[in-house]
Image (cartoon, one colour):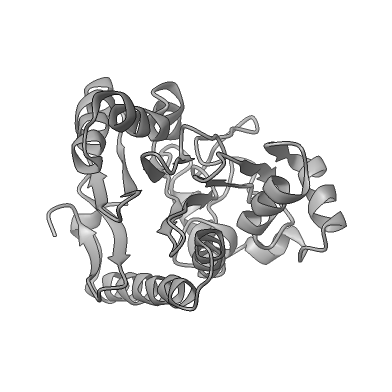
Length: 285
């Protein structure tokens, strides 16, 4: 997305949506809910909001379909779940949580993931549910120019447990059943109570090859870097030097936040129990 040319009404719509999602997550945590509950609630809201490239607002593949990916991970026990290439699960993040909590697996894909979601009692929809005219028009305009975007959330609860989750429709005009970093643990999503929780957005192939989310955690654990320093080294250093674009939202075990991008902007929001709050779009806000 070209943030510099983002019309003010659309920018305000994103800010309102981010603020709503943030308040939703904070309410779960303030009410004693777990970080997993908060992450799922926030991402489910964004999956249902056509503004975002996830769920109802997912972009289209080269075949004119919506294929969704999601993952979730808990820092307490490094448990994780993910789904990839699904077309009929209304809330992929809930399916990812079900994989984490109700199966012995980490990732399920395609029809197998849908069968599991159905057996788990999750809401299934016709694939046409995810079709939005704005995304379809973007697909028609961008057949030769891939676009990407993701929604994610990281939370720290009263018990000191971190959780990170990510959900996406992938890249506009993606081909061959392409799967990006969002459902890949250690690439687009990672959480460890010893260090931090991370959710990423951007060019997924780079996030996978540089294991971006885990690398941030590893720099904290093995080199003693702070969360901001670690995120900057990976996103502004390693990945930027390799030609990869994107950003991350990170939260460490003490509640310190890092939201770093090497692009012109990244929709992001942060809040805590002390009343601190940030909602931003552009890189330097």
